[in-house]
Length: 105
Image 1 (cartoon, rainbow, N blue to C red):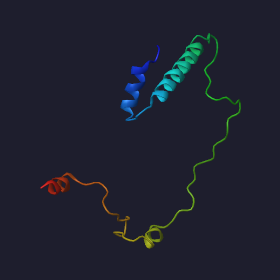
Image 2: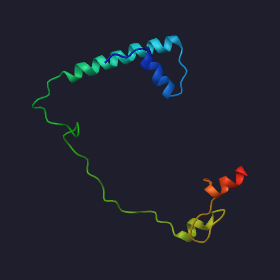
Image 3: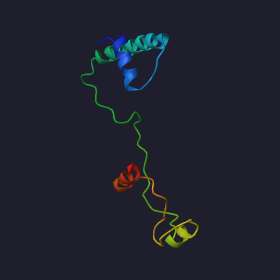
Image 4: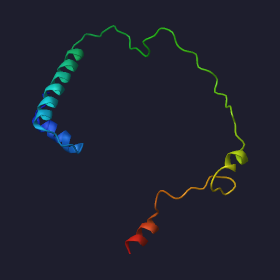
């Protein structure tokens, strides 16, 4: 596949970008170079090569997931500007359909 001006303009449109003529030419050239390299990689014979999940032969040990620094609920809510005694209270950030309909009236 070869990338041409139309491909770049389509991508720029989808990304809502305005490109200069120099940028368009540069992207065409760079993208075609990248595709050529991928074509060369694709042509490499990998029969008999095991898939690789890690480049290192050693694997790092993971620690046990033990919770720490547990804060009591009352202590956590103590400095909150507004609570209901169980949860933090914050102003709504998403409007409900009823609110949106009322605003349109």
